[in-house]
Length: 245
Image (cartoon, rainbow, N blue to C red; front, side, top):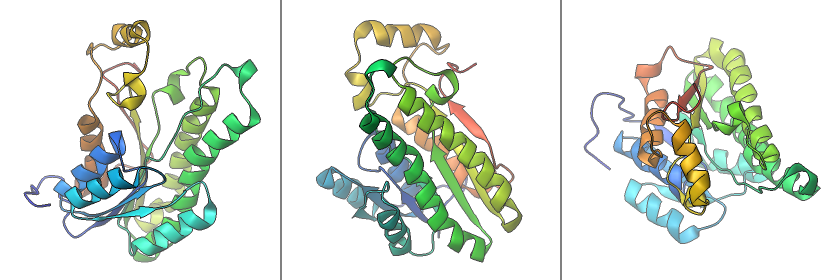
């Protein structure tokens, strides 16, 4: 894609976006492409959607289950010399603690947290060698506030914050930055199915009084990936309409 502007330009950079077939991931992939990056879109399901995103972004789509260490490593290695890694792949298995099965816990932690660890570990090797790179991990406002029925999801997203901050300290001396984005409630398929009273409760607690748009999350990700954010690492940027204050 063309028409990249000089501010937050990603020209000449290669980016991998996991979970990029729909919603926030799709918006991130397209925004990075607008910035001039060559984008690889990874997905586990929704091949047609992922291929459509990759086509629009002028990049390519690759199927991978990032909760599998071998597939995550192969995904990163196949992407080439990465300048940018965005970990957006995630899922929910919501239910109250007393009803939550071991599988509900393991699947969510495996994809959301272990998946981010596996891709970060694989990507960091090349970034350290080249002494540059930007990692952005997508966490959630739920990691900071908690939410009934989401102990697995909240734990996985809180783990991403600890992972990100530790990476920032570990990789910073080699010029590699690691930051996290914490979206609030955003218009996606996940929020579309919520009961009206649950949505109204969110809006009541959000100072801006509305749900976010995927493009608003993507713009913040682009900034953190760009050279304009070259002195920012270990940060958790809340893009939540003020909900997390």
